Image (cartoon, rainbow, N blue to C red; front, side, top):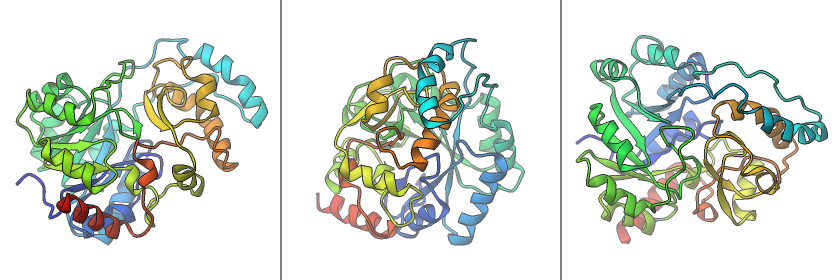
Length: 341
């Protein structure tokens, strides 16, 4: 058995603060598998979070890394910066004029997982691409199992060729960033259940389904379509252990429509449709993480003001069904529903 679980539900790594050690431990305690989000954190911060979750659970845990891509062409974000300057003036913030290269502390994080304070993590998953062959081999030699996130059969082939242990198949219904392996790629629209079938045709690796799985019936459908487990993110955003802000929690039930946008980060990501997206979608270049850094002051100011019209409110298509309560109870309830379905 590849996965050490009694309930085949995975707490998705949600970068930016929504994933917490407490959420990981709660899902693990209910028999599932929790993942920490190392994206946007330094290697030191990642190590401290691993240490905290180890205080809370002795079950296997996972860490997710953002795979760095090539820098955007010079000047790619300049026109978008000019477009956003009036927004910055209204909010009293300054947008960065120069954005240095950012590899999200990739090398230091790998070193911490292999030789440093984060040693002993059982699972390592990748988003936005795949590691180099030598890096994947080093992780394998350390006894860490590897999980690639894919959005197309072509990405699945590449992950399988690298010798990864399993795949997260992310459908277009998923909240937050699409895990396309290149920032500029248009996100696929093949629904999750069909995407699972297409990926199964090119690999025999175990598949974990992700995207819009907000209730037991949806989980059961994904398992029937060939997945061995289901990864849930939005479903946990309103739980007690979630790190989501009060405004984000409120928006999940107050706002209706989601859409895929590059307006906040330069990568396609599904969130609750608001005025910022309506003003700027179609103008943001496919430049990540440059656009992410460019809009950070605007997003921070909107968050401080709890302004739902301008916050980045990542959410999957099943966001209205996100449940309150303890994450362990939500996990058990969802699995009971799936068994009944």
